[in-house]
Length: 401
Image (cartoon, rainbow, N blue to C red; front, side):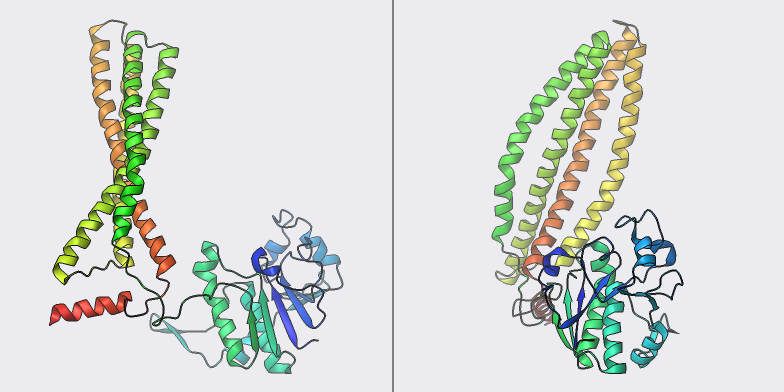
């Protein structure tokens, strides 16, 4: 056993930083990484999933994974228990490990005491095992981590904190920790980062979006004219050819209308925030500030409106389809068909207007997500003299005074 253990995940960005010619460290990997030839060698594999998962013949990463587990005799495999048909399996010492490393932690949830066992992913088990071996046997003095970025939604939201916890634990019990990953590459809270969105950004976005909207507006008018002509032809004959032309024209109007509406919504949202910023600047002598929560709250509110308006849009479309069928049933040139066409035309205008309403709201919501993305990229930490927290507190105190 070496004094260093290298724990290697599957993320391609940093796993390639490991030098596979090394012989000064033990290598630990996960799940199918050896059986599917992602890596050529390892000293241990962590396969902590339930039996039904690793025995699954339809394993999406390696259909022969279970076969490899049963036949290979070179690599130790940490599992939930030792399985007789997996000769190299070794039960992960969960209870002994938790007693040794977590017994000093007391956790309460909803006022009730719970047992503290925090393992949110396979990497956690490997990190904890390195610490366990260090404490119990003193064999390891360094842990290196590669190929672990925690970039997917599930990993970032639910699993990243587990990796952070166990890396922090290892560093506190004396292990040297070398992290090849960007998951902790953040500015220093309270010291770095600004949260003030430049005032010019609103005008810049409007300037960027307006030409596209103007071009689409012309295309939209042309598409509406084509639709009206197709409707006129359908009103006269209502044949298959006329029906196909009408459907095609309607789809074109809807698509262009959605795109145009989203641009309009984005422009309107920038104008709204600019006007709000102007009001703030007037009241504060030139200062303004929008918190990320403001954009997030606006996006959520708009999302709820979109759901309601989308339902209304679908209902209008259903009614429109019934009217369409009514035109086909009415005799050619009859007063009944003329009336059906007039109603259909009116309903179409409502339908396309509702399409625009949904699109405008969607564009406004997307713009708020755009704002949040900008802030996430540039703020990163609430720090410095212009930090969100500091400015909000300063303004609150000023208002109180």
